[in-house]
Amino acid sequence: MNELQELYQQVILDHNKNPRNFGELPQCNHHAHGHNPLCGDQIEVFISVDEKSGLIEDVKFKGAGCAISKASASIMTTLLKGKTIKEARKLFDDFREVVTLDSNSNPDVMNLGKLAVFCGVREFPARVKCASLAWHTMINALENSDVEQISTE
Ligand code: ZN
Image (cartoon, rainbow, N blue to C red; front, top):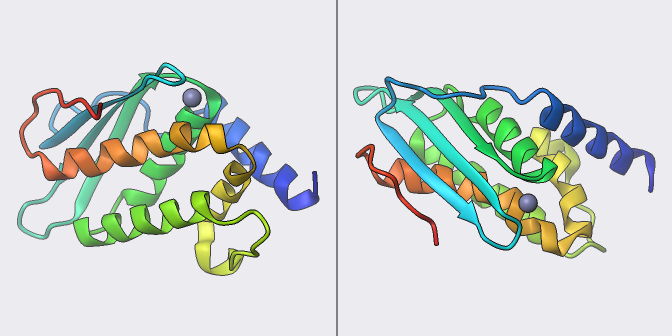
């Protein structure tokens, strides 16, 4: 494992141990529930979007699952605050690109910013679904403005 990969792993372990924005958001107007049956990960994402400005004011998540699913959700919430829905979708596209990249390719780490941490996930194809769960759930939440439970299955 090289130094960069070690750093990525530390970030993931840190977010798993101390997840950011963990909990419910009672005032949210977007909410979805995601489930990854392969691993048993469960994630709920709560998003509060200001309907006038279209900005994501707050985002929280809760759930139970493996370290990667939890860390991914935690890192995602730190990236979404203050973003527009369009920017959130762009982040989702960038994220998918990072985790599905050929492991021989050299992604532009500087350009990726915080998403670079997910480069490490490429080494574990079985974990891509774990890392992606929160992101798919976030997109589902943005597409469904009601607060009913939505399954990603
Ligand atoms: Zn998992």
